[in-house]
Image (cartoon, rainbow, N blue to C red):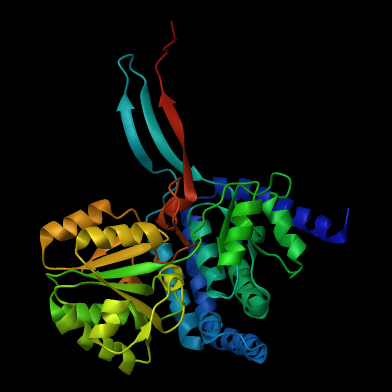
Length: 419
């Protein structure tokens, strides 16, 4: 057995032991620890930002994209915002022990479905070091332990954040090993996590680029919560309010182009495109966005011609593809063909059209008259998210504390026996 394998198995063993202790810990103890985590992050915001500046400088030296750098960067204000998110998680109702359903059988048995922790979560992520705080806090709120393996570009920042999270745990008598950080960048460590560390890991959550998520989905021997990519659409319907549409499209694309909820394709009804598309296009160009359109879009206002690959590309950059369509049926069909089942929005004042879109579009998040950039656990009131799942099993959409639980059935009897 290699030294790396021994190290990883020991991490798994400690995580499993901590999970057993955490399962019995009180809600008050976990809440106290979460508040202490928020306090430590807030108090160390400047120091964490200094560590992050070194990671950012090294990444710039490697010529990484601006979108990647934006996801990596954590200044002091962003660290304090992360601390605020952890504090929000601390204030949330504890999902553990909640009764989600209850009924009584004719024989008098009272059956309850009760939320319980999953156990040990393995989290593999790339550039976003704030994920360590979000994931660690959400896992703890849900009574789980977590093993974090960040990317090489964010290694120092991730280690600094995890150190603060771990230091807060003993304040309420919880084991430090409830949150662990894989200290090596050896890719073999990822493979060992995907194999489950000999039964120590119950679920894997990847968060990063397409190649990382694809590897996890292909190689994992334990369940996975994942989305492959965020090809999000905003559809401007013929009955859209022009001012509302212009503001929403600009925000959906340009607020932060590097997030998975950024709109990548604008769909617009042909009936309003000649009057509304030039206005929206000019706003986007003024904000620094490159436009790539189909023949109809290019004939209405100046932009580059789109290719077939544009419709299925997650740019994560100030680039937007534009497709002029003939009604809601075309919009739904385009999303079904090219989308990634992440997040889609319709802009319209026609309530019937909105209802049809929300009903028929099969994505994890669908919105009416709102920006796709609301695809975020914090905006849902979760305090943060461990990721956005686009699958159909167990969790879908932002994965918060409640989604990091499973359940058991608790049955109360009074001497019943089965005939």
